[in-house]
Length: 413
Ligand SMILES: NC(=O)c1ccc[n+]([C@@H]2O[C@H](COP(=O)([O-])OP(=O)(O)OC[C@H]3O[C@@H](n4cnc5c(N)ncnc54)[C@H](O)[C@@H]3O)[C@@H](O)[C@H]2O)c1
Image (cartoon, rainbow, N blue to C red; front, side, top):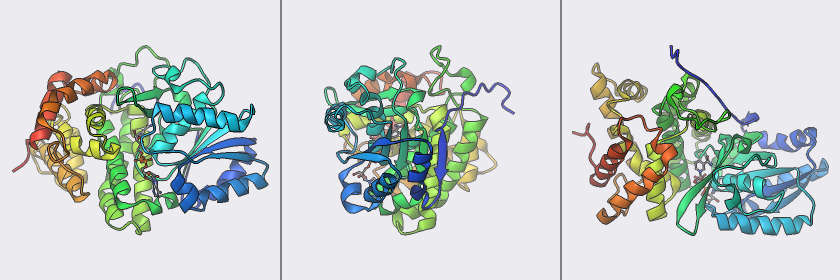
């Protein structure tokens, strides 16, 4: 029993999951009294799927007007958000929408989160980084189309700042969607690379939050309403359930995108992971991955993937029993907890390789001269470094980056 837990669990207001549930949305929004929305998506969904048209027609019949913004792009920038704010406010002609809908992967959901803050007054999104200052965003309804980011359940929007090529976070519990509607059928059209990147992102969320700092030790910065607050028995339940589903279905969904059971399995894996990390938070894996993304401009999932085995290896001491438990979920446990724990990073790296993602920094295109900057940039994300459960995060980050460059794991044969 974790008697020290101090839980501050946060989740979306409503969580709706199941094949075909998207068809319930117009009636639900009408029932909740919404009348005028903005739907944020990208060209793929407007041009290649019937979903946007289906939704706007059905909502219109119930008296809900919807303005569609089709300009979402992967890894949205602050500049894209500011341009979208100006375009939408002009199209709205002074009318105030009463909700924002996000349809897409984490990129469109994050753009919609940012727009839920900027649309009412028209400020640049840069005005909200760090602290949203008590501002009330428009209610957000998130419809994820990838099984990965879990942004539909988190308090943050991640945007790229083109001025210095780093990712910035706009964070507040008020940014958690009012409704997260997970219809696994949305994911059936995901191409293999998007499926792999998103799947490993979900798995990283699950395992990183399973191993992160305990809630009783987490620095909440004095906030009475922290967005992230460390792991607890509750978050660890979701993390474990998510890992089990990832082991069962992730590779299958990548290899056989038409396997509907695998698609549904990964939809659950993704939201369970989000219900864990969306409260527990993350640490070195994402911290170093952000720095790798800043230098290589590779996808979010692949930057997580290349770092993950080496981050897990660094935790074989302080998180031995938890890693041995993960070894059990993978069918790798032996009678020796240390050996079991050290088998996990090796097996996770092999799994990442089977998703055709490079498994060391050299193969990922990182040059040796970039390593120092990677460590410095990663440590600069202090909220993630502080949550890494080791005695000396700076020392650990340096060793992780070196190991990742050399492809060295303590448990490898
Ligand atoms: N806010 C958070 O809590 C959080 C957490 C993790 C990641 N993120 C962010 O999420 C982004 C990554 O999101 P992602 O991995 O979901 O990918 P994505 O949203 O960037 O989408 C990648 C590509 O896949 C396409 N796509 C998405 N769904 C599809 C579908 N069903 N069928 C066909 N094509 C589809 C998109 O159109 C896009 O071209 C990054 O910017 C990352 O920073 C945010």
